[in-house]
Image (cartoon, rainbow, N blue to C red; front, side, top):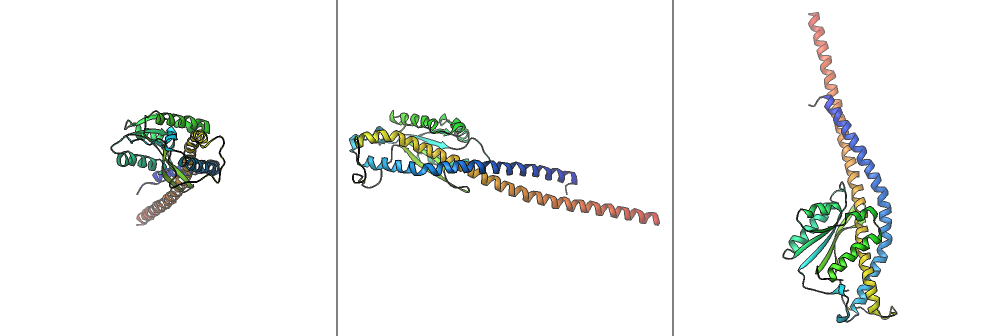
Length: 286
């Protein structure tokens, strides 16, 4: 059995860890509220804009389609992996890395697959495979629409120039603080709406459908990427809050066990001292 000093040191160490994880949990909870409000407010706009764009695209002739909806034979694929810059958030980052590796090895095993990393954890994981074409981790330092729009414009340019035939987004979709769903979402080419769509009775177009679609596409793509990063940002704080809550509970349980062990060891030491004193006294009497 460990001596009393070692047990006291372990209790002190666990208590310090528990204070740190508890503080991190409260910080993440505070940041989560703001991030959750932001993504909740943004989703209806993003979904409606995407729905409108897909509906309009299906009503256009094939030869008048945008350069962003061009369907080419897939040879070069770009996966935009969205992780966090920091760890201590459970399986948040490892799930994205695992899903990205599945796309690289299983879905596009015979294709040329590159990775654009948004988050240091993604960059660290895929830089070792020499697949990272750019690292945009700094976007989390100032997460604004304008900063994300610059990344979206770069992606649109690479697709339009034929550098990549398909671009996929991999990110965590925020459901609640305890649940994040890994999403694989096609960014380019634009996914047309399934089935036939008739929007003539619902909308009046001025100046024309074609011009509206060409104006909406860049805005819709920028909004789609911004929503994905916002989703990931909210999911990160939810995952970290949950992870730190569990870590605090585990540290509390371990501390209680150590205190029980310490009390038992202290009781045993006191009993041994009493026995030694009684034994010495009996020896003197005899």
